[in-house]
Amino acid sequence: MYNGIGLQTARGSGTNGHVQRNVAFVRPGKKDSVNYRTEDDLAKLDAQANRQPNQGILDHERKRKVEVKCAELEEVLESQGLNLEEVRTKVELYRSKLMNQGGTATTELPKDEFGRLL
Image (tube, one colour):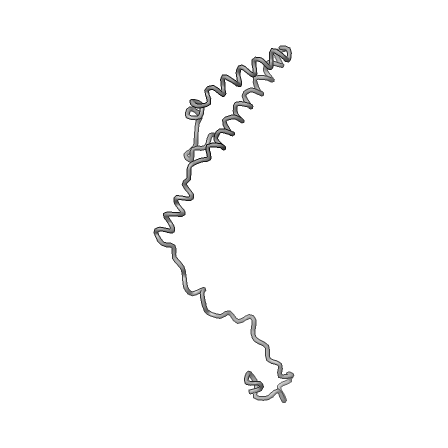
């Protein structure tokens, strides 16, 4: 062996005798051991996946829908030829009416199976 590794001598081998390690060699190790999840881990993952919807997001969606309805009413009133002040007052009354129905409107609006507004 030359330098304790590989060839006995570098003579006649066509190489200079420099030995390098094989970086393509895959060592057996952690790949063989499979770490399975326990029942506790699965329960934690299920609890994280099924959390309650964020109330702030639901309120924002409700307010956005109210504003869309107000914008539609404003367009209809403007197309009817009302002046700007009359349109603003009617839209404000309609907006306040819709916002006052806020507590009951969130329960009456259609929701999907996750509690999100449709």
